[in-house]
Length: 141
Length: 214
Image 1 (cartoon, each protein chain N blue to C red):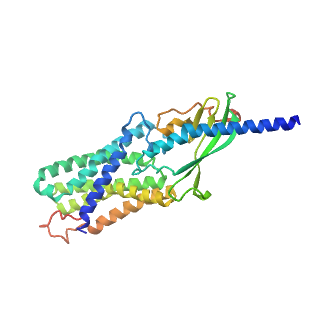
Image 2 (image 1 turned 90 degrees about the vertical axis):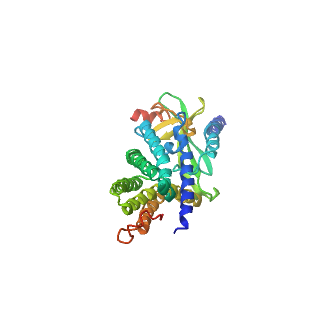
Image 3 (image 1 turned 60 degrees about the vertical axis):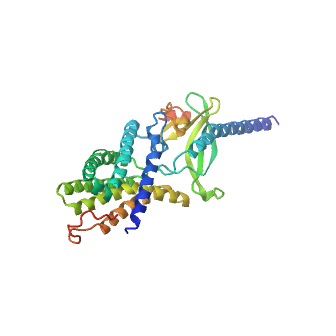
């Protein structure tokens, strides 16, 4: 009985972390990005912004400083074909991680991570090497 | 063909203005433009952004100047202005537009095929502008016209390829393939078209210089 209770608490806390991460990504990145892109010129060599984005929260890990983060991926639907069909989605157009406790979102560019504000046009530096990297990955380097 | 001339001028002038307007974001010191975000991580971000600023500034001057220089009215009424504008435009094109474009092409979206496409277009512009200047100095106006049209045609690629990219996005085509196709098709198409319509010295009497055919 106690085991079942502990398991359900574990599952529900993981679900809460996922929901919090999703809400944070939505509020600090996806929604402001959509507003910014609405003003963006379409007559440019930059890719025309997607019609829709969806956030997939992946897994919770711990970095070398012992801080928990949640990795995520954003899929995008381009063009005017609609986003009902799974084939219409480009997978992993943006990937990154969220530190829910610190309310920080990072996105991946090549081998580095930067604060998500970079996608909103803010000049930022690459984040510390430990950010968004699981403890095992950093120690393996 | 003659009837298409005003249409070409209107479309290209509007296209050039639209590109210039959409490039203003590159000069906002506080903001990273979306076009640059696609390229991250870049080895030298400030250098890349500097080259982009030089390139768009040079293009904002050179393309409208080229369109103005094609004006028969300007040539007839203000030949001196035509010559001076041509000299300045030649300098801007050869010493700012083309070198910055070569540098930017190294980091082009779409990889080696895109880089090759931009470099090919830049090489045509550089070669054609040099030949156009040499022909003008030699008063060989037929050759001058032919190579000037090549320069204008390659600059027109900027407008045509953006229109193609917009259409490709509308159709939901693969972004990278569309980018490469929207570059190579107009680059080769415009060069071939100019060769097709350009008068040759053998065919056009010298008494008919600068036939305005676009």
